Structure formats: structure tokens, C-alpha cells
Length: 152
Image (cartoon, rainbow, N blue to C red; front, side, top):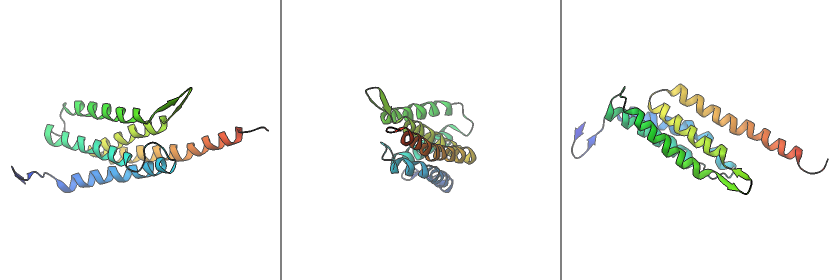
């Protein structure tokens, strides 16, 4: 449906489905970061994924499904996500914090882009791997710190 008042509706259900998947795929990552009191959490990760998905969907609708111009859209998305992720990294003296959160922000952007392009399997695997690394390896990291604390 197209009109000057209502705009172009295109394939609304497909777009809503893809943006919802991007949201759902990244919620476990967001939950993990929120529970760890990180600088980004339940609001940031799904928004990054949905925005990336939205940019990709717009590129497909405006430029065409197999347009070379989509590379420029992806470049912009990657740059923007890098800027957001950079804000999550904090340096205090010789220690740096937030690199896992920054990497996860980048990954959720890729999840959103993959889902936007219709590669649900890639989006799901990336989201699952991100969550498992944060959850599983985060526990190993914590246990390693606890084991090394204090005198023997």
C-alpha cells in the first residue's frame, strides 16, 4: 500500500517478524549484561540489534535485494555500532573494563543485520555463542579470580 500520507508499507509482517527475531535473539545477552551490572544491558542490546535489522531492511527495500549499495549501509552500521561499543570500554589506570560488553554490542549488531538479511541461522548461532561465552566463560573467569585471591 502506497500513498503520500501513509508512506510505503511493503511487507509489514515480514519486517515485524525479522525485527522481533533480532530482539528475541539478543535478549539473553542483554539479560546477562544487565545481571552483571555492566554499562549496557536490557535496553541497549535489543535496540542495537533491531536498529541494525532495520537498517538492513531499509537497504533491501530502497536499494534492492542484491544491491552493491548495501555494502555502504553495512559500513555505516558497523561504524555506528563501533562508536556505541567504544563508549562501553572504560580505562582506569592500567586496567580496562567493558571489552566483553563492547564486543557483545558489535555482535548483536551483526545478529540484527543477519536477521534483517534473512539469515536467521547465522543470527541465532551468533547470539547463542555470545551468550554462552558471556555466561560460561564468565563463570570460569570469576572462579579463577576467586581461586587466586588471598593467601594460600
